[in-house]
Image 1 (cartoon, rainbow, N blue to C red):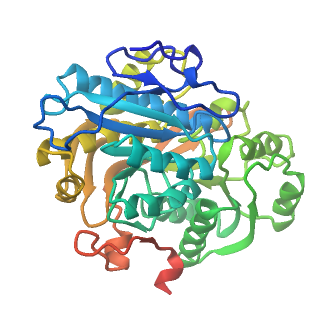
Image 2: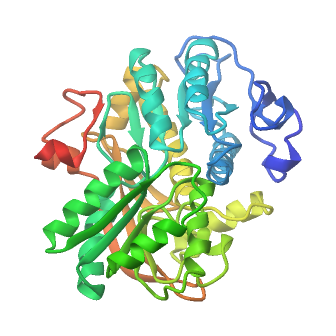
Image 3: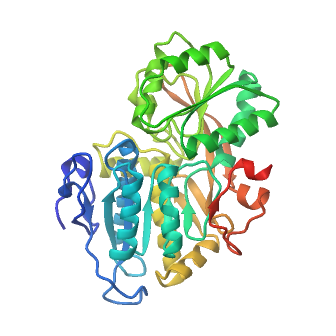
Length: 432
C-alpha cells in the first residue's frame, strides 16, 4: 500500500487496500489521490481471487472540498472496519478514489472511467445535486449502482441510484410549522441558484403556504458568489420574520460573516444544509450563525450513544480533521448498506444487489442510530433532531423525530421504484 497524502489523509487507517492514479485538479498531484488497483473479474463474490471494488468520486478540491474530504474519510473508516472484520463474506474491499474537483464535466468523465474502465462494483459519490444529475443517466444507461450520500432536495426516482442523505419531507416539513408558530409567518428565501436551491425553495414555499404563511422575497445566487451587500439590503427591506438560507459551497457561506456585521441581530434562520454539512458555526465567529435552525440526523455535538461512538472513532482515525457532519454519517452508512446488500445477495451483480437493497435493509448502531433503506423509494428512514445555534454558536437539540420515512415519492406521487422506476427527478411542481 502506498503512503497516503499527508494533506488529505494524514490519519487514514492502514487496512484499506489502495494505490495511486488519476491526476487531481486545482493544484493536486496524482500522489494526492489514493486509488486501488483491481482486475476485471467475474462479479460473483464466490470467486476466491476476486475483490469488491468500490469507486469513490467526491470533491477533494474546489467549492465542495470541505464536504468531500470528510465524506471520503467516512468511506475509508467504514471500509477499514469491514476489512478488519474479514471483508464482505470473506472478500476484501478496495477503494478506487478519484477527485471530481467540484466540476460536473469531470464527474461525467470519471463516472465512465469508474464504471467502464475500472469495473467498479458500485460507486459512492457526488456532492451537489447538479453533479448527481450530470452523472445519473450514465449510471442508468450502463446499469451501474450509484450511492448518493448527501442531503438534497428530494425527488430522485431511479432504478440505479440509492440516496442515504436527508430529503425535504424529513427536514422542511417538520421544521417550517415549528418555526412559524414560534417566530411569525413572513418568510424570505435566499438559495443557491441550481437545482438544489431552486427545488428546495419550492418545498419551503409549499410548506409556508400550507401553514398560512407568506413568502416576502426570494433570491437565487450563483455558485461562487462572495458578495452579499445588496442581498442583505433586500432582506432588510422585506422585513421577514424568518430567513431561509440555502447556501452551498465555500464561497456562498461567506454570507454568514457579512450577515453578522450587517447590524441585523437575532433574525431567526432555517436551512437544510448549513451547520450540519459544512460546520459554518465553527468556521465563522459568533454570532454569524445565531438563531439558525436545521433538522439533521447527525452532527459531532450530538450526544446519542450511536452518534458519540461514531464521533469518537472518526476523531481517533482522523485527528487532524476539523469536523464530521451529516454527510460523513450518510457516507459511512452508505458503505454499510451496500456491504449488507452484497452479503445478502451473495454476489455483486447489479440486479441482485438492487433487489437486496429493495428488500428493506435495516442497520442498527449507525451514526444516525437505526436506519432502514426503503425499497420503494431508494431513500433511508432515520431518527432526526432539530438543531438550534445560539449567539455563542453552541448547538441545542430542541426536538427529536423518530424514524422519519422519506416517503414523498411513494405516498404523494404514487411511485414504487421496485415495480417501475421512471428514472427521473420530481419536484413539488409535479403534484400541481
